[in-house]
Length: 96
Image 1 (cartoon, one colour):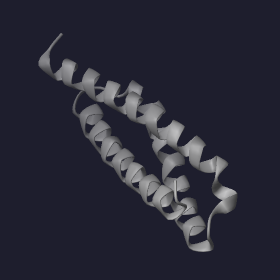
Image 2: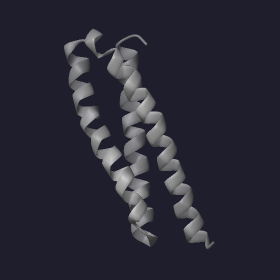
Image 3: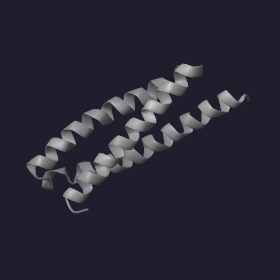
């Protein structure tokens, strides 16, 4: 396995792990959405759209190779972190 291939494999593993973490967080928050204030619901709607995009990209990235995969995986990881931060803000707003 080349160093580039190992890096791509690690990035893919990171994305799979982030996907699982975000799925769990999203599911927990969805159960509590009925308690949210209007401004929190607006943020939820925005981050939920990002989630859908993130999930779709995470599933399609497995077919990419080389530099394209590295660039897309890096962008997906960044997007995943943005979603995680938004989930934390929402969780804090609704009082865990």
